[in-house]
Image (tube, rainbow, N blue to C red):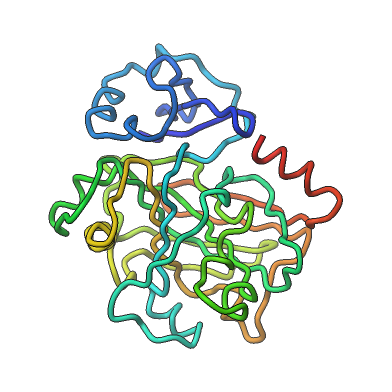
Length: 293
């Protein structure tokens, strides 16, 4: 299944994509694509629903973040050896973990609002893992049972905040609008192999990133198991698993996003995103209210 959320910011409704590409309203089945609605039992029930019996939704509707009520937004750094190299950093002996604020989450096609004092705004196409069951101290072989599905993420970053302002990376990763997720949460049964997915990203029609999840250092099952040794993972938690090479920081010289730039990205089977960069100025309160409601 391709589960999604649609509608005005803060007022999104649950939906599902049918085989013809139509959005169907799931409100009669679940209250949101969130929490316990992502459990194996709930997903099994949804799979039995005849989608033709559900109301169609206007295809021009805004797509919201594909998961609601996210408790934790966890990121894995330097998880592609070639990206670590372009960042002049060593491949870590264990996964690098940092958190991205859940207030960064937005819809897949909403505007990126440049933070105040930002000069090094960057992009990162990433595979997102969505948790479906509470996981604590699980093994790698058990991990698949705790994954609800996968989604596309743009891990937008402000490199100056991240690398030049002391401390951990979170401050460069958590600004408002830095976490577009979606358009869909694809349940794991519909994705043949999360370890072999093509991924790409372009800026103003110039391609910068082209990779495949098969080159990840640490695979999703290992990551889920590893994280569960340090914290309980809850249904609806999202894990962003790292990016392949081609980020702006890695260009020679570096290339960063400017106001008016258009970012397009995608992962095979998980859909595409498109964002426009807008300035944080007198207009920003209006822009942010459109995004967050």
